[in-house]
Length: 214
Image 1: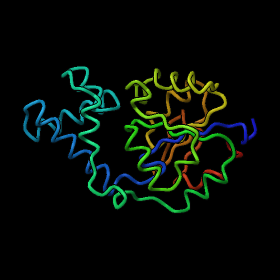
Image 2: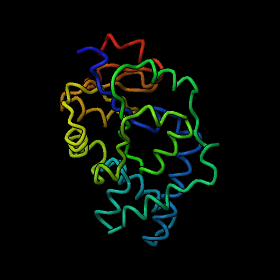
Image 3: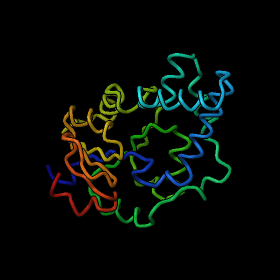
Image 4: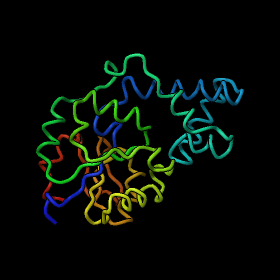
């Protein structure tokens, strides 16, 4: 398949930008405080619950909804409030040029909420370069790595898995992509990649130079 016929599915956090310095610490703090308030637990227990549900389900939200009846929309709104998001978004200004050089359709496929995802893309000046943003709400809270979310995106966008390349920083989220028949690209500095990863890159900016490997 030619590169122009590909459909590129990009994760957002720690793939298109670096959420580590500011955004993830803020979200983790907000989630912990939310759990403390709504479940009536202390800081230590709230941290344990947040981490346990993230490890088990791929998202803290899933465990809170399933086991505690938390309203997902309220949770997302309360835990993704930022006083100065533009200052917190760390990204390489070469991102826009990289996306422009990459042939084919581009979609964002993220476990993040819609308002946050579109705000980050606007801050980076690249929102217009994506045909769609698939957030956790559009996935009906069937977030990565759950196969149901992948299938919903493919069905609604009328895509075949063989057309798609999934670009992601979390290895577990690439496993269902590969099982469905997508090509997979792992972003990050991990020394080794699992067997279901087709290509490992230090930075998403390196992607156009490696199209021949996909």
